[in-house]
Image (cartoon, rainbow, N blue to C red):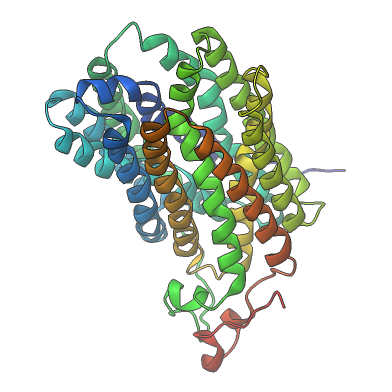
Length: 416
């Protein structure tokens, strides 16, 4: 059977999206590995210093609708170029003026948050949406977002090795220069290759704001509730996991091996979820990924089990939740607002991240243990699985977007 070959420019743009996701992992990866060193440098306990990470997580969510709208307007790669420049300013600025915690929070927590949001899931989802037909989008998005998986495999062990060799100021400064100059410049130059957004059909609801469309849609709330659990658990990995393992006395080599394993399984998760979504009910797949996420968090509490079982379970669930949520979003909502709606969903994701970073730090300072935080995350992800199983069973395209003015602002529950 003859297979249609992808144009060379499409392959190049997919590779660029993959590379952007790969390098973006450095923003959180450096903070993750240097978290304890940073708290010591600024003379703070974990709960006090964790505000920098909490602000970062929440601001990333708040920036996501902005990034979605910006990607729809000027294009995803130009948005990513602006994000790389912002990330460079954030990391470089924090390294150049290391004496003020307030300045660090402003740089990393706000500028860094915009940088990460502008280089990751929302603009890359819009890029894939412009490049591929409907049935190929899931697998293509999986390929692009697997840049984060390779980032875990390659860069996480590098940061763990680097931490005792170089101080955080040096690491942040070098990374900032790389983001601000070659990465931002390359993205801006290649942005001319990306296709423009196809003109959307003019419908009665075409100009209705995204929030007006989704606010009475129960499927949106089911997606958001599930994605909240995704963000909550990812934030534990991004901020507290290395500190948790350090407190448990896990050897540095074992931590690096576990993070590489997590990244390898994340890679498989992204590819498998995109392929399975073509053959199986997506709501069942999404619920299964959340259930696996819950089980993997539970493994952290099993004494003597080691770090590898957790890394396998969490990595296998890592990208599946993001890819399937994005597929639900892009299939359900009109082409004019899909970027904005996914930005709203990512805001819920980052709200979960914000709470995990701060409450996890408070819990540790109060009990000298992460056990209560991990137990709470087990329960939260079980709720995410239930929301996906029960709330997304009939989540097709939203009828209100194709109806007349009477229906445009008040979408009916298509899942009933």
